[in-house]
Image (cartoon, rainbow, N blue to C red; front, side, top):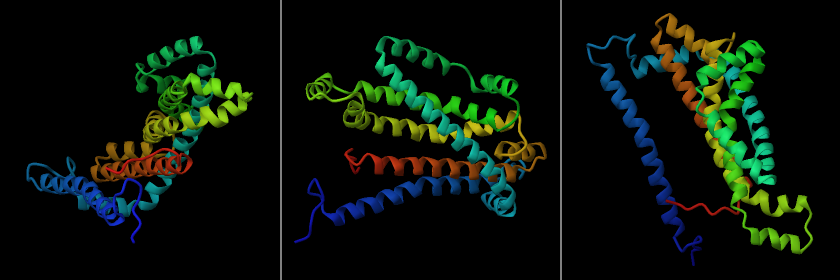
Length: 267
């Protein structure tokens, strides 16, 4: 007798469902590329306005080594800034949870900080900290901090007082509060914020490189734009998109492994 997964749905049905979802997922990019190809064939659109997908892929292949070196610098800044934002976000969220009145004040300030345009914050960071790696790390951290801190803090707020009282009844220490109650409650929210922050991190690194730097995808894109090599600009955009998706997928994979108790429904 063939085993059925939880919920009574046959394994063959799950496999067919996953195959259908993958097909639908691919339908979007394939349709977009097909539309791009059709529009690029219009005689009124020269190549420097909209290069074809073939020209973009050719530019990506031709400049693979150069793009790769710039991309590594951008990814290093993105990961470094993401790590800083993660540490700061977790600490701030824990402090907000420990002192709820203070936490509400900090929450309001964090929300207000998101009203400040990044293009206004980045030059100030560069003026204060120079054009080196530190400035890029801080710009990325500024972009990524908010979703991580807010998602983690909201996870703290989902903890029921009855659960906390139960641990107190058993004489649990503060470490045991976090180990057995707060950590399981906050991890799903933290990784939800991390997935958002991972996609923002590359954008933050590129903005820092646009405004000042010697290496990175922001530098490569600026040079391609100034020389009217639009196919190289589109190749860089494609590389950045794939990198952002890879970071998002990596965070999602780690999150799924570290939160096995979370029930994830299959569509």
